[in-house]
Amino acid sequence: MTSSAERQQIIDWVDEAHSNGARYVRTAEVIGLPVRTLERWRLSSRSGDDARQHAATSRAPTNKLTQVEREAILNLVNQPRFSHLPPKQVVAILADEGLYLGSESSFYRVMREAKQIKRRDFTQAHSRVRPDPLTASGPNQVWSWDITYMASTVKGQFFYLYLFLDIYSRKIVGWEIYDTQTAELAQKVVIKACLREQVTKDQVRLHSDNGSPMKGATMLATLERLGVMPSFSRPSVSNDNAYSESMFRTLKYHSRRPSKPFDTLEEAREWVAQFVSWYNQEHRHSGIKFVTPDQRHRGEDVELLAKRHQLYLTAREKNPQRWSGETRNWEPVGPVSLNPQNESKGAA
Image (cartoon, rainbow, N blue to C red):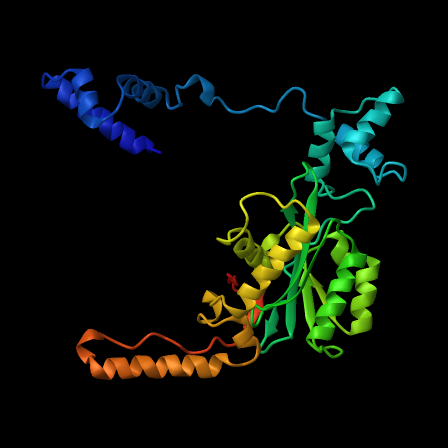
């Protein structure tokens, strides 16, 4: 904002230019100011006040609540029968009783200024605290699982793929397709996966989102019996379960996926069985230095990557002029984390 001294200096320059024959309009164009602004500055410099009509000292609105009215509102909303209700319900009840103390917005404003805006019912707000990071330095330490839709040829009907993934090796350790989502079906899949992988008590942490099949009593009781420790994402935060989300993206955009929906449950199971076999045994995963999930799960990735590194060193020795620096990094991927403090992705 231009100070009074600066304004007066500009006015003096304009007056000097005008006395030397320059027109006010042309002078205003040169200095980049409207003529009306210069005139207003000249008037305010004479009167000592801002000449703008809307610059008058602000006055308190005539309809502002008095202190007595504000205290009446606060006393009322803190009465036992109103203390658990939001203002929108309080004003409705008061209207039925023939009492008006102020509008709903006035109630909110008074309560906000008194720092009394909060949840006034018995429900709790969803937790938005990031779940504890889970780190896996080897296979069968941290699993991630989720359920995804698979369209059928019947409109409005879906098949549901239950899929369990080892985040260290990216291996699919368990899966099944059903025509519904329940905790009872989920516990069948996790039991088979634990038996297949020979999981012992307190060995695996299992992460999932907050869906009812994940937090159902049957599923939680089964995990406790198996010695598998559950972990859950924040509500409506898909990034907390990034490995499963990425896995489903790989499945849905796979080049061999049928372009049409599945006719039957058996047809869907047959295709997913082929996909899982390809993914675990043939797919060279970018997140684990392009070895297959099965190879990393068995610990074969270290030797494979060492051979690749030696091959590149030999190629550089034969043709050093083709290399401007180090060879490609074939170092094995170390421990991996789900929901680390510094955001990272576990892309499939």
